[in-house]
Every structure is written in C-alpha cells, then in structure tokens.
Image (tube, rainbow over all chains, first blue to last red; front, side, top):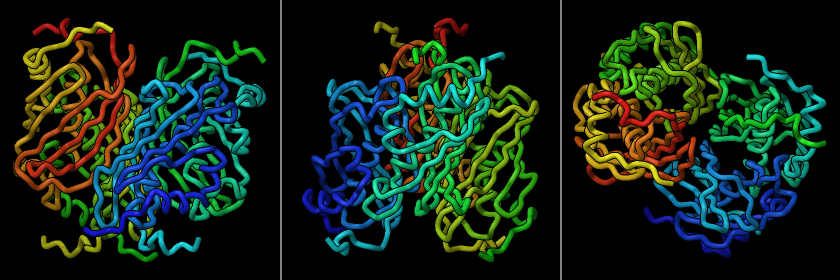
Length: 142
Length: 142
Length: 142
Length: 142
C-alpha cells in the first residue's frame, strides 16, 4: 500500500489547530510512518486532588501520540476505542508518550502507546484503534 | 459492608483541589453511594483539530464521574485501568457524564460511565476499575 | 434506520455453525433487535487451574451474547475490540450473559455485556465494538 | 525485588490442571521471568460460524500466555481486566501467543500479549492486569 507519509512539519502544522492539546501544553517532537513521540512539561495545572498528574492529562498525552501516528500516513482518522492500564503515578517534570503502529488496513489501524517519565519508568500502557476517513489531511486549508 | 457515604458537598470540597478538572471546567452536579454525575460547558479550548470535542476532554469528563463515584464511599482510590468506546463526536454546548458502580469489594471497584450530549445521545461508553487505598478521604486536611 | 430484525430461530440456525460455541456448550436463549441472552451449564471442562471458571470461558460466553446481539439486525459483523473487567470468580453451575446495544451506525456498533451467575452476581463487565460487513446473514446457505 | 522464578517444567505442571486450556489444546512452549510463549494447532472445533478462528479461542490463547507470564514469578494471580484489539482473522493451522511484562509491583502486574499466525502476522493485541495473591504456586499440592 502506497500512502503518503506526512512530514513532522506537516503534522505539527495540522495539529497546531488542536486547541485542547495546546491548552495542556503538549508538544510533538518526532513522527515517522506510523509512529510519533510527544512530550509535556508538567506544572501545577496538570495535577489531581492527590497531587499526582491527572489521569486525563496522561490520557491526553497518549492520545496525542496516537493521533499523530494515525495521521502520519496522510489520512484523517477518528478514534474508535482506547484501553489504558495505569501503572505508576506521574510525579516528574517531563513526560513522554511514544506511539507505534501494530496494524493498518484500508479502514482500521491499531496503535500501542507508552507514557514514560523522565526516569524512563512506564506510567501508562495504552492501545487504541482508529477508523480511517476518506479525507486526506493535506486537503485541510492552512 | 458499612462504609461512610460522603455528601455531595464533601466530594465537591475534596475535588476542588483537582487543578486539571478545574482547568477543563468540569462541575460535579450529583453524587450518591457509588454514583456521580458531572457536566462540562464546552468552549473553543476543548476542541481538537477537526473542531470536535477532544477525546482527552471526553476522557477527563468520564474520569471525573468515575473518580467522584469511586470516592463517594469515603476511601481514596486510584484508577488501575479504563476502556473507552467512542461512539459519536461531541458538538453540543453541554456534556454530561454519569458513573454507576457495578461491583465493589475491599480492594477493587468497577464502574461504568456514559458521556452524553444535550440531545441525550451517547458519545462515549467507559468502564474502569480502581484500587481502593487505606486512607479515608476525610483525613485530608481542608 | 430500517434494518431487518432476525428471529431467535434464525439466529440460532446461523450460530449453530459456530463450532467453538458448541464445544463450550453455550446456548442462545433470547434475542431481540440489538439484544441477546445466552447461558452455559458449567462442568469440569470449563475450569482453570484454581478450580474457578476459566477466563476464556467467561470471555467466550460474553462474546457469544455480543455476537448474537450484533447479528440480530441482519448484517454480518466482526469484532474490532473488547474490554473486560473481571469482578467475581465463577463457581456456580449456570452462567448467563446478556448483551445490550449502546449505539449503532452504518459501519460500527457498540455493545455492553454482563455475565452473571445463578445468584445474580456480576462476574464480568464487557464492552465491545463490531465492524458491520456488507453481507446479510440471510444470504448464508442453510 | 527477589521473587522466585518458576521453571518451564514447574509452570507446565501447574497449568496441567487447567481443564479448559487442555480442552482447547493450548501448549506452553516457553517461559521466563515475566514472559511466556504458548501455541495452538487449530482444527475445526476452534472455528466460528464464518469459518474463522473464534474470538474466544484467540482470547483463551492470549489469556494463557498472560497467566503463565503472571505466574512465572512464583505467586498465584487473578486477572482484573483485559483489553483486546482484533486485527486480522485467524485462518492458519498454527497460532502463537507471546506475553511480556510491562510493570509489576507487590499487588498488581501488567502484561502485553500478541497473538500471531504462522505467517508472522499479528491477529490480536491484548493488554491485561492481574492482582497478585498471597499464595505461592509452589504451595499447590501436585
């Protein structure tokens, strides 16, 4: 299957319109065909009532890596389902999420994402599937 | 099992320390033993690059109902896992999440959460399990 | 949406070709548009090394209710994903699984399934999504 | 953490009491600290009404690798939750499941499992968490 591969710059431009990722402060740092790496500098706004990084922040970080990887082949895609195991509380200042494609056909693609802290410990393990839409992400006006 | 039931006011006070829920703008509106209902008034900050409510917002809204329901019996708890099916894109101005307890023993409790829009349509179906900690939420200094 | 609703007899005939469900001993007992109820009489073949009903049996029972409900509208469908929370060990002689449709569009449908024992206690909570195929199940030669 | 590592022979002996795994015909072929590999020779009993390997068989195969890996450190454990993405239908004669530990603490451990066919293609991606019990699997009378 010959699908276009979108450059890191193209993906950054596309996701620059993602208001919630911007509110959270998530940055895309790497992307390749079917893969992506994003990061977040944790501050007080990201914490829950126990003083740990909020589950919603960990989800959003993983979801961003998932979305960038899913869009890296040039087609728009929407999440169908995600599953998360929470393994360690987030307490460090920098968090990373890395997504990897496990399978992709014409309509569905599945990714696994791991969120790690700056000690390299895994905080969450995430897997999710997207439905691939007809639209190309290049069609989007800048 | 006789566990203390925390009042809606007590749960609101406890979760008032949740900085990320506050950043998102999530409000607790109902809580009972093992159940909770929360809501969110959607604005531009909550959207993704397609102009739909971001998956991270839908997760965080469901997660808040899950957390409030899990804490309603007076014990602190942390999420172990969650699974989500995304069924409809969020486009309305008000979203609701409602959590219901399916089982609870001394260490583990499982909840189901549905996020609906103001048309009453289901946007996401969520299920998750928490590990119940020894600490009572009443011990937390105000 | 006007989709054909398949009768309980039609669904039983279709699933009579399911060799693994037959090996396990699962029986379809009710079906309606988007819903299904199946049961299993537990015997020694269904147990794991701890003497409890095997997780694979609980999954297969839930999956059968899921599949029957997903096929009840007359279209063939394949599972994309499932998530399970295991809440109580299975120790009674009769187990039931009941599936309920949460959403359905042209391509995707999501179901929730609960497996209960003869005491009425919930053993597992299951949610899953199918991809709806073009084929009608009526096309299948008997 | 110094936990006993159980030998492949010890794990095979322990799981030889798993009646449902035996009914299905699953064989343990490798095990190490936190990892396991199992296989299944597919025959007509494993198929669903579409003639593909039944989802319940794929689950049970993955679950077996998960269970063996979770028991490899010498403690009995029970599944709390599992999530599966179904990526390709099973049609070949030999299937394999391989489990890998992602995290483990005193009470909880999380594994990822991939089921592949004899072409090396991934059929399902599975992740799951166990609750670790007090009992050692060595305590079990042979």
